[in-house]
Image (cartoon, rainbow, N blue to C red; front, side, top):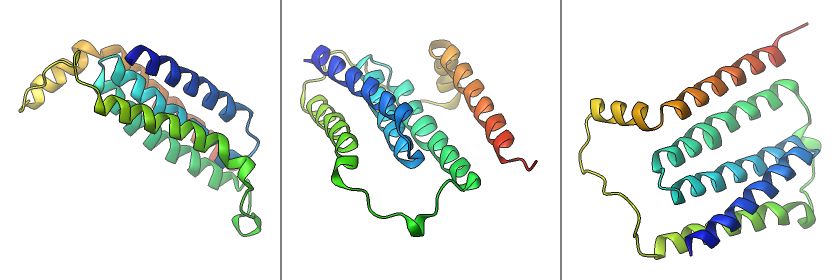
Amino acid sequence: MEQIIFYILSSVVVVATLFAITERHPVHAIVYLATSFCGLAVIFFLLLAPLAAVFEVIIYAGAIMVLFLFVIMMLDLGHPEKVTRPPFRDWWPALLLSLVIVVSCAVLAGSPVGGMPEVPLHIDIREFAASLFRNYGVAVEIISLQLLFALVGALYLGRRK
């Protein structure tokens, strides 16, 4: 069952990412990218990496999306008062992909937990840091570099000429 959900979510992530790349409206592209990040978080959870899943949601779907929205607002790419509500044909791909992610999460929540490791009830900061940098050290460094690149890109886009 988990393998089927993995393949379904993988296709959702690929399709949402392609929509994010090819979308002309920047806010729609951000919605597709957030959908892709949430699907990727569920994939990380399926691969027994709950910490990476939480990082995916908090850092990427949260912080990076806010950064992208700030860049869009700074560039003044559109005027919201002139924009009309988009027709249904523009909403259905994001709604369909989001529905697939929600159904996958519901199926995972209802299935018996067989491969999940036991988590201690209490963990102190030293144990958390040691576990974080021992098991996910490379991922943490890559995420920090991506945040640095995003910050430099935002500063470059926001500077006055």
